[in-house]
Every structure is written in C-alpha cells, then in structure tokens.
Length: 108
Length: 153
Length: 278
Image (spheres, rainbow over the protein chains, first blue to last red):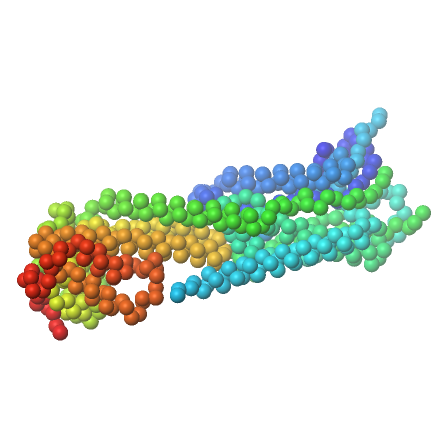
C-alpha cells in the first residue's frame, strides 16, 4: 500500500479513484502514566509514555484505513491527513483519512 | 434492613443507559446504512480538485455536522477504562456514527444542488464538554468539502 | 481515469466486542486493584506503626494539647482515681518502658471512653458513673490501654491516610460517582473490619490484664451487659459489617467464655466502683 499526502503517487499513474477511506481509534491513558507524567510535568520535557501511546494509536488508525482501502481493491492512498482530538479528559481519538486509488507504474 | 439507595439508583441508571443506549445505537446504524445506500451515487474524495477534463457546471461548499453524546453506561465503562488505559471500544462506535452521519448530511446538502461528487473533503472533531473538563459532554463531528456538478456529456 | 465509491465494509473502525463483557472484565480488574491497594496499605500501616517510636506519637500530641484545651483541665478526684487504675493495669501489660498513659476525665454525660494518639485516654462521667464495680471500670480502662499498647490509633491513622491518598490517586480521576462510591464503600467496610479486629483484640488483652491484676476476671462482664442493654433500641438494625465494634452480645459471650463460674456478687471477688452514682 502506497500512502502519500499529495494529490498523486509520484512515479505512478492513478487510473481509478475509489473515494474516501478512513481509520480511527479511541485510546485512554491509564492512571500510572498519569501519575508519572504529573511528576515529569514539574521538570518539563518529553512525556515518553504519552508519545508512545499516541503513536501506537495512530498506527492502529492507519492500519484500519489501509484495511478499508484493501477491501475495495485499492493499492494506494493519496491526500492522507491525520487528526488528533481529545474526546474527553483522558481519551484521545486518532483519525486518519485519504482517497483510495488504484495506480499503475508509469511507462516511460 | 439497610439498603444503600444511592448505589441502587446508580445501578438503575446504568441499566437504563445500557438498554436505551444500545437501542438508540442500533436504530442510528440502521438509518445510516439506509441513507448511505440512498446517497451512494454522490461520490466523496479527499483529492483537492476534480480532473481537468470534467465539464463543471457549478461548485459550492457543502458541510454536514452532528453532535453525538454517549449514554451513562458507556461513560461508566470509560471511567473504568481510564484506570487501566487502552482502546475505548465504547467511544469508537460513537465517533464512527458521528462521522458517517456528518458525511451523510454533507451529501444531503450536495444532493440539493444535484451535485454528483464532493472533493477535498475534510473533517473536524471537537469535544464540547460543558465547561467541566472531567465530565464527558459530547463530541461534534464536522465534515466539509466542495460539491461539484458536472454537465452530462 | 475512473471515479467511483465502492461500498466499504461496515465495522473496520469499531471494535465488535460485547459491551457487557468489557464491563464485567474492567469492573473485576478495578475491584482486584482496589483490594490489593487496601490490603497492602494495611500491612504497610501496621509495619509503620511498629516502626514509629511511641515518643513520636507523644510529641505529636504535645502540639495539639494547646488547641484542645487539655492543659486547662483541673485535676479532679475521679481523674486521680482513674489515673491510678491506669498505672496499675499498665504494670500488668507488656508495654514498652517509655509508654505512659495519661487519663483525661470529662464532666459530660456521654456513655463513652476512648483512646487516642500519644497514650491519651478519655473518660466521660456518663460511663464512669454507670458502672457498679471497679472491675467493670478496670475492664474499660484495660481495653483502652490495650488499644494504646497495640498501637491501634496510629495504625488506623496511617492506614486511613495512606489508603485515602492512594485510592484517590488511582480512582479519583475517574469522573464516575459510582466507582468512587464503590471504592469508598470498600474502603469503609475494610476499615470497619480492621476496627472490629482491633476491638476484639483489645477486649482479649484487656481481660488478661485485669485477670492478672485482680487474680480473677469477675465483674468485667458488667461493661458488656451495659452495652448490650444500650444497643437494643437504636442501632440494632445495622448489620455488624457496618459497625466499628463487634456486637455487644458477642463481646459479652466472649468474656463469659473466659470467666469461670465462681463469679457472683456474693463471692466477694467484686469490689464496688467508688464513682458509681445510682
């Protein structure tokens, strides 16, 4: 699966547009991370636990989007955008969407 | 006999929340599927522009939005989940419903001008809790894009 | 180039697990976590209470004296009498050398006595004047001294504080009243259980000491008879699990089982309480 966030897949030619595909997941952080991060907040810096949590979730959202694209026979996704939103205190939604397309290699 | 009335009340709320929440969700999904089928002729893309060889008659901004809220049971489930962390199953279907509903409403608007496709579709999701950061209010899902009407060749 | 929107499969973006299953799983996990926290902090509190020297307790209480107005207390006859009784009982116990009991006597009609931090024992006129025999009064005193010797007040304090902090750190952030209520109830029920255990041990130890002091345990039962008579009217509908003390009837029975059957007023073993007022 080729994924880009531009209109095209460079080096390939889009032969079919299959429409919007999207992947999303909602994740909650746990109390242990909260307490440690609370301490970390005193000195500042990266909250590694949260970075990992959000990255994990983003990967899952992406794989769900790919699953959707595969199910309709696409081999690439263009114009991909990520969005993170906090649903409520302690939970975040990771959302990714793009256009599923079928590409073939450009003949030179 | 000692009866903890507050616990009884909360359990009743939980059961009501679960029953009506599941019912409402099933009903909403049924309506979503039915309308998705109805509007399947309107195509949506996140690509920025339609291809240059299309004969375009008109283009307009269309949008759809919906505010959805979870039931008492799901909120309870979330507060438990918040202790251990991980995937919040209960909210995933909420967001899924919201997003599909927003797209449908956007499509319904496009249908008014008999547009056939919508380009450059974007989403916004925001929580609009009523000033209380710890209590879940509700989530707004907003979808927008440019509806394009092409002249039949 | 072709443009189309094939139908997408339905449930890729949702997890199809039964919500009730998740509910039961999470609830069980939360309950287990709460139990682990409460039990381990109790062990911690017991360990800490033994590790904290008694003079620290006294030092803490010194600071509160000014606030409580204890220092303004005028020495009275009942207080001297009770203090002497306390010292005699303490001598029978296995208390450490530096442990000192300070008896306070209050002129109020409350039927109560209690022990608190720093070896301070409070007696109310209401209780002192209700007991006919010195042995029953000694039983109250021995019971309260047992609390001090067993370090119950500081254990309860340490357990209460540490559990409250830990549970609010873990469950306090959850925005649901039910979880807080459940965890709160669990905490209350366990602390009541520990409280009843403390009371039972204090009864046992106290009885042993007056047994040593007088050479017999007669008269001790009068105290529990009094409690039993008092408890029948108002809080009898509360199950024992919700009470700080075991049922008075059970405490009475426990004492009777220890006593031999030569205990009667006519046996001459029981001496009158000089503070008794009919």
